[in-house]
Length: 228
Image 1: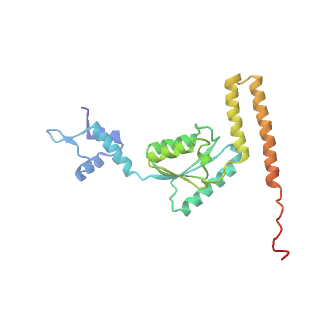
Image 2: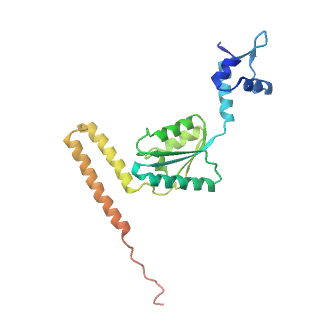
Image 3: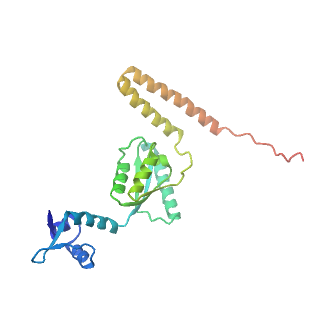
């Protein structure tokens, strides 16, 4: 059985020797004793102490904001400020803000990976996001369950609203088509480029049509009581 001296154990935990002595006096972590009275710690005690250390550390409220491109930095600032105001209205103390730039399809986003790592280390109490797709485009429920297993709640401000703008959805669809076209035909093949171009053109037409429909003034309904 591996035994650690108090100095070795303190270094492994990242705490001071005094902290270990206090835990011993308080009965929170009782070490073994050598015949000469020196403290010795086992690996089982190491796991116990790691849990104690994690429990002592206050968990964080993290705001997570994301936009798909660098040209949307103003939108990112607006989104972040909106999340701050929401957190304050709920009485949350804001401990950290993570602002990401990148597609929701990219699960290697720097900020996203940092957030997941923090959750897996047990450092996060809640994550506040504007919409589900600010975190991920697909599989939100998986991450919601995963975070919950590590004690972190995902607070979605607009949980039931359609969030992503048409342009961002179109960009993500093009990325998906490009990925599979490259696998089918090769990334530099004419057929792959043609397929991506066709999808872009179709999405462009649809986006323009949606914009025209949304900007059209609705006809005002007459007052049914006007002739009474």
